[in-house]
Length: 404
Image 1 (tube, helix red, strand yellow):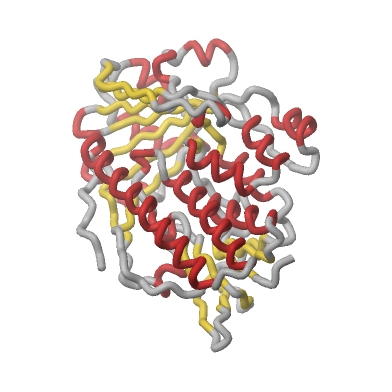
Image 2: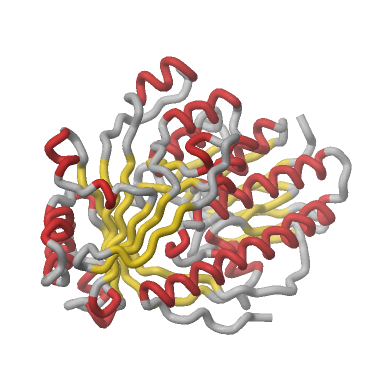
C-alpha cells in the first residue's frame, strides 16, 4: 500500500473509475458524493462507450469487473444516421472497427449498470451524502476538503470530479466559465419488451445512434440498449460479489429544442412531471412521421426528465497544485458527439496512471502537471468538436472565445 492518499469529490462515472484504478494499484482513496444514494436522481440512461471509454475501463477495473461490464453492454454496431422528420436519410456514418475491443469498440451501456459495476469493491471507500463545499491547502502541501455536513478529510491530492456545478472548480479555477448551450433536452426511454413492441420500431432506427432533425431544429435522438442475458446470470457466471439491478431492453428517446421553441418557460419545464413532458414533446412533433410520433407516445412517463445543456469554455494557463479536476468539472460538453462520459473515463485512466507514478517516486506536482497537460489537449478538443457539431446539426449556441 502506498503512503499517497487521494480524496475524490464526486462519485459519478469518472470519479468512480479513478477510484477503481487507484484501489487496484494499492493507493489509498476515498470518494465523497453529494447524493445520499447511488440511485437518488436520474442522470441519464444509455451511455455510448467508444474505444477511449472501453480502453479506460479495461485499465482501471479488475479483470472480473471488466468482464461484467462487457457482458452487460449492448453491441449496436458502429453506424450513426441522420434523418429528417419524414424519415428521409440525410447522412450516414460508419465508425472504425477496433477488433481487439468488445463490440468492435462500440458499446451501448446502461448508466446505472455501469455505475454499479464501478462501485464494486469500493463500498468502504465511498461516502454518500458528502457534498464538498470548499478546500484549503496546508503548509505540508496536503489538502483538506470540507463538506456540508461539517466533516472534513485531508489527503495528498484532491480531485474535483464533482460535475458541471463543481465546487472544486469554482474555487480552483474561478475564471473557468460554464455557459448555457441554448438547448433543452427531455430524456426518456421506450420499453422494448416483446417482439410486437420491437417490430414497431424500424430497424434503421436501431443503430448505435440515430438523430432525427425536424423543423426549427427540433430533434430526436434514438439509441437502443439490448441485453444479451439477465444481469443475475452475468454476475453468477463471472463475479458473484458484484450486485447489479435487473433491467429490460429499451430505446433511449431524447427530444431536444432551443428554449424559444418550447411552449413554456424553463421554470415551468423543470416543474413538470413525466406525462406533461411527454405531452410537450408530442405537441412539437406535428407533421412528423407517424412512426416517430408513435415511438414518443410509448415513452414511459416515469422515465422522462428535462436537462439544460451546458458547455465549458476552454481555459488554459493555470498553475498545477495538489488540486486537480476531472470530467464534467473541467470540460463539460454538449452531448452532440456522445463524448462526455468517454472523456471522463479517459481522464480517470490517465490520472490513475500518473498517480501510480507519483506513488512510485515521481514528484507529485510533476505527475499532476503531466496529467493536466494531456487532459487539456484531448478534453477541450472534445468540447470544441461537440460544440461545432451541436451548432451545425442542432442549433446549439456557438462556443464563446477561449479564456486565458
